[in-house]
Length: 219
Image 1 (cartoon, one colour):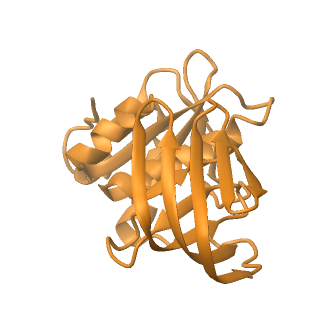
Image 2 (image 1 turned 180 degrees about the horizontal axis):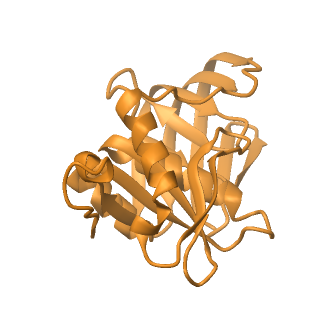
Protein backbone atom coordinates (compact mmCIF):
# COMPACT_ATOMS: atom_id res chain seq x y z
CA UNK A 1 0.00 0.00 0.00
CA UNK A 2 1.24 3.47 -0.90
CA UNK A 3 0.45 6.37 1.43
CA UNK A 4 0.74 9.91 0.10
CA UNK A 5 -0.08 13.03 2.08
CA UNK A 6 -0.26 16.03 -0.21
CA UNK A 7 -1.84 19.40 -0.69
CA UNK A 8 -3.93 18.78 -3.76
CA UNK A 9 -7.14 19.44 -5.65
CA UNK A 10 -9.21 16.67 -7.22
CA UNK A 11 -11.52 16.57 -10.22
CA UNK A 12 -13.75 13.66 -11.20
CA UNK A 13 -14.98 13.36 -14.78
CA UNK A 14 -17.47 10.61 -15.57
CA UNK A 15 -21.22 10.15 -15.40
CA UNK A 16 -21.17 13.21 -13.12
CA UNK A 17 -18.52 15.81 -12.36
CA UNK A 18 -17.15 16.71 -8.95
CA UNK A 19 -14.42 19.00 -7.63
CA UNK A 20 -12.46 19.01 -4.39
CA UNK A 21 -10.67 22.34 -3.85
CA UNK A 22 -7.08 22.51 -2.69
CA UNK A 23 -6.42 21.11 0.79
CA UNK A 24 -4.08 18.66 2.56
CA UNK A 25 -5.34 15.10 2.00
CA UNK A 26 -4.35 11.45 2.34
CA UNK A 27 -4.17 9.44 -0.89
CA UNK A 28 -4.22 5.64 -0.64
CA UNK A 29 -3.02 3.52 -3.56
CA UNK A 30 -3.73 -0.15 -2.83
CA UNK A 31 -2.25 -3.29 -4.36
CA UNK A 32 -5.60 -4.08 -6.02
CA UNK A 33 -5.20 -0.89 -8.08
CA UNK A 34 -7.79 1.21 -6.23
CA UNK A 35 -7.10 4.86 -5.41
CA UNK A 36 -8.96 6.72 -2.67
CA UNK A 37 -8.69 10.23 -1.26
CA UNK A 38 -9.34 10.95 2.41
CA UNK A 39 -9.72 13.94 4.72
CA UNK A 40 -9.09 13.91 8.46
CA UNK A 41 -12.73 13.10 9.28
CA UNK A 42 -15.66 10.92 8.02
CA UNK A 43 -14.15 7.76 9.54
CA UNK A 44 -13.37 5.22 6.79
CA UNK A 45 -15.33 6.90 3.99
CA UNK A 46 -13.18 8.55 1.28
CA UNK A 47 -13.95 11.92 -0.28
CA UNK A 48 -13.52 10.38 -3.70
CA UNK A 49 -12.18 7.11 -5.08
CA UNK A 50 -11.71 4.89 -8.11
CA UNK A 51 -12.40 1.19 -7.74
CA UNK A 52 -10.32 -1.43 -9.56
CA UNK A 53 -9.62 -2.28 -12.26
CA UNK A 54 -8.10 1.10 -13.07
CA UNK A 55 -4.77 2.59 -14.12
CA UNK A 56 -2.74 5.33 -12.47
CA UNK A 57 -0.64 7.62 -14.66
CA UNK A 58 1.77 9.94 -12.86
CA UNK A 59 3.05 13.08 -14.55
CA UNK A 60 4.75 16.15 -13.12
CA UNK A 61 2.27 17.59 -10.64
CA UNK A 62 -0.71 15.59 -11.94
CA UNK A 63 -2.00 12.07 -11.27
CA UNK A 64 -4.66 10.69 -13.60
CA UNK A 65 -6.64 7.60 -12.59
CA UNK A 66 -8.76 5.98 -15.32
CA UNK A 67 -11.18 3.08 -14.89
CA UNK A 68 -12.41 0.60 -17.50
CA UNK A 69 -15.41 2.83 -18.29
CA UNK A 70 -13.11 5.74 -19.18
CA UNK A 71 -14.03 7.79 -16.10
CA UNK A 72 -11.17 9.89 -14.74
CA UNK A 73 -9.98 11.06 -11.35
CA UNK A 74 -7.49 13.91 -11.84
CA UNK A 75 -5.36 14.78 -8.80
CA UNK A 76 -3.41 18.01 -9.09
CA UNK A 77 -0.46 17.90 -6.68
CA UNK A 78 0.66 21.21 -5.22
CA UNK A 79 2.95 19.90 -2.47
CA UNK A 80 3.81 16.34 -1.43
CA UNK A 81 4.33 16.14 2.34
CA UNK A 82 4.81 12.37 2.64
CA UNK A 83 5.17 9.43 0.26
CA UNK A 84 5.79 5.87 1.46
CA UNK A 85 4.99 2.30 0.41
CA UNK A 86 4.35 -0.67 2.68
CA UNK A 87 3.92 -4.40 1.96
CA UNK A 88 0.92 -5.62 3.95
CA UNK A 89 0.76 -9.16 2.55
CA UNK A 90 -2.36 -11.29 2.22
CA UNK A 91 -5.04 -10.29 4.69
CA UNK A 92 -6.57 -13.20 6.67
CA UNK A 93 -10.01 -11.65 6.26
CA UNK A 94 -12.63 -10.68 8.79
CA UNK A 95 -13.26 -13.21 11.52
CA UNK A 96 -17.01 -13.46 11.83
CA UNK A 97 -18.90 -13.65 15.09
CA UNK A 98 -20.78 -16.77 16.10
CA UNK A 99 -24.07 -15.78 14.49
CA UNK A 100 -22.51 -14.93 11.10
CA UNK A 101 -20.44 -18.11 11.10
CA UNK A 102 -23.52 -20.18 11.96
CA UNK A 103 -25.59 -18.41 9.28
CA UNK A 104 -22.97 -19.38 6.73
CA UNK A 105 -23.00 -23.00 7.88
CA UNK A 106 -26.80 -23.21 7.89
CA UNK A 107 -27.23 -21.61 4.49
CA UNK A 108 -24.53 -23.80 2.95
CA UNK A 109 -26.29 -26.89 4.29
CA UNK A 110 -29.64 -25.65 2.97
CA UNK A 111 -28.49 -23.81 -0.14
CA UNK A 112 -31.75 -24.63 -1.92
CA UNK A 113 -33.46 -22.00 0.24
CA UNK A 114 -31.93 -19.39 -2.11
CA UNK A 115 -34.00 -20.92 -4.88
CA UNK A 116 -34.95 -24.19 -6.48
CA UNK A 117 -32.03 -25.83 -8.22
CA UNK A 118 -29.25 -24.03 -6.32
CA UNK A 119 -26.18 -26.16 -5.61
CA UNK A 120 -23.19 -25.45 -3.36
CA UNK A 121 -19.70 -25.13 -4.83
CA UNK A 122 -17.99 -24.46 -1.49
CA UNK A 123 -17.91 -22.29 1.62
CA UNK A 124 -15.07 -19.81 2.16
CA UNK A 125 -14.10 -19.79 -1.52
CA UNK A 126 -10.56 -18.27 -1.62
CA UNK A 127 -9.68 -15.11 -3.55
CA UNK A 128 -6.61 -12.87 -3.49
CA UNK A 129 -8.39 -10.44 -1.14
CA UNK A 130 -10.04 -12.95 1.20
CA UNK A 131 -12.60 -15.75 1.10
CA UNK A 132 -16.11 -15.43 -0.32
CA UNK A 133 -18.62 -16.72 2.24
CA UNK A 134 -20.48 -19.03 -0.14
CA UNK A 135 -19.99 -19.81 -3.81
CA UNK A 136 -22.83 -21.70 -5.49
CA UNK A 137 -24.67 -22.17 -8.79
CA UNK A 138 -28.28 -21.33 -9.56
CA UNK A 139 -30.72 -23.49 -11.51
CA UNK A 140 -29.38 -22.11 -14.80
CA UNK A 141 -25.81 -23.03 -13.88
CA UNK A 142 -24.66 -19.44 -13.30
CA UNK A 143 -22.11 -18.89 -10.55
CA UNK A 144 -23.40 -16.93 -7.54
CA UNK A 145 -21.24 -15.36 -4.81
CA UNK A 146 -23.01 -14.86 -1.47
CA UNK A 147 -21.76 -12.44 1.19
CA UNK A 148 -23.31 -12.96 4.65
CA UNK A 149 -23.65 -10.36 7.41
CA UNK A 150 -25.65 -10.06 10.57
CA UNK A 151 -26.28 -6.38 9.77
CA UNK A 152 -26.07 -5.54 6.10
CA UNK A 153 -24.44 -2.16 5.56
CA UNK A 154 -22.70 -0.35 2.70
CA UNK A 155 -19.26 -1.74 3.53
CA UNK A 156 -20.60 -5.28 3.04
CA UNK A 157 -21.86 -4.38 -0.44
CA UNK A 158 -18.46 -2.85 -1.26
CA UNK A 159 -16.77 -6.03 -0.05
CA UNK A 160 -18.96 -8.21 -2.25
CA UNK A 161 -18.36 -5.87 -5.21
CA UNK A 162 -14.61 -6.38 -4.87
CA UNK A 163 -15.07 -10.16 -4.76
CA UNK A 164 -17.26 -10.07 -7.88
CA UNK A 165 -14.69 -8.02 -9.79
CA UNK A 166 -12.05 -10.68 -9.07
CA UNK A 167 -14.28 -13.72 -9.62
CA UNK A 168 -15.48 -12.42 -12.98
CA UNK A 169 -11.87 -12.45 -14.22
CA UNK A 170 -11.88 -16.25 -13.89
CA UNK A 171 -13.20 -17.73 -17.18
CA UNK A 172 -14.13 -20.95 -15.37
CA UNK A 173 -16.54 -19.04 -13.10
CA UNK A 174 -17.71 -16.02 -15.11
CA UNK A 175 -20.26 -14.65 -15.33
CA UNK A 176 -20.66 -14.37 -11.55
CA UNK A 177 -23.54 -12.49 -9.92
CA UNK A 178 -23.85 -11.56 -6.26
CA UNK A 179 -26.30 -11.99 -3.42
CA UNK A 180 -25.98 -9.85 -0.27
CA UNK A 181 -27.60 -11.73 2.62
CA UNK A 182 -28.15 -10.50 6.17
CA UNK A 183 -30.62 -10.61 9.05
CA UNK A 184 -31.15 -6.88 8.51
CA UNK A 185 -30.20 -4.81 5.46
CA UNK A 186 -29.91 -1.04 5.79
CA UNK A 187 -31.82 1.00 3.17
CA UNK A 188 -28.64 2.65 1.84
CA UNK A 189 -26.98 -0.75 1.42
CA UNK A 190 -30.02 -2.07 -0.44
CA UNK A 191 -30.00 0.91 -2.82
CA UNK A 192 -26.28 0.48 -3.54
CA UNK A 193 -26.63 -3.28 -4.04
CA UNK A 194 -29.57 -2.83 -6.41
CA UNK A 195 -27.68 -0.20 -8.40
CA UNK A 196 -24.81 -2.69 -8.86
CA UNK A 197 -27.06 -5.58 -9.88
CA UNK A 198 -26.58 -7.43 -6.58
CA UNK A 199 -29.56 -9.27 -5.12
CA UNK A 200 -30.56 -8.77 -1.48
CA UNK A 201 -31.82 -11.52 0.83
CA UNK A 202 -33.11 -11.04 4.37
CA UNK A 203 -32.31 -14.12 6.45
CA UNK A 204 -34.42 -15.42 9.33
CA UNK A 205 -31.89 -17.01 11.68
CA UNK A 206 -34.49 -18.92 13.71
CA UNK A 207 -36.18 -20.22 10.57
CA UNK A 208 -32.88 -21.47 9.19
CA UNK A 209 -32.29 -23.29 12.47
CA UNK A 210 -35.71 -24.92 12.10
CA UNK A 211 -37.29 -23.07 15.01
CA UNK A 212 -39.92 -21.45 12.79
CA UNK A 213 -41.24 -21.98 9.26
CA UNK A 214 -38.49 -22.19 6.69
CA UNK A 215 -38.89 -18.79 5.04
CA UNK A 216 -36.39 -16.67 3.17
CA UNK A 217 -37.54 -13.28 2.03
CA UNK A 218 -36.04 -12.04 -1.24
CA UNK A 219 -36.25 -8.43 -2.33
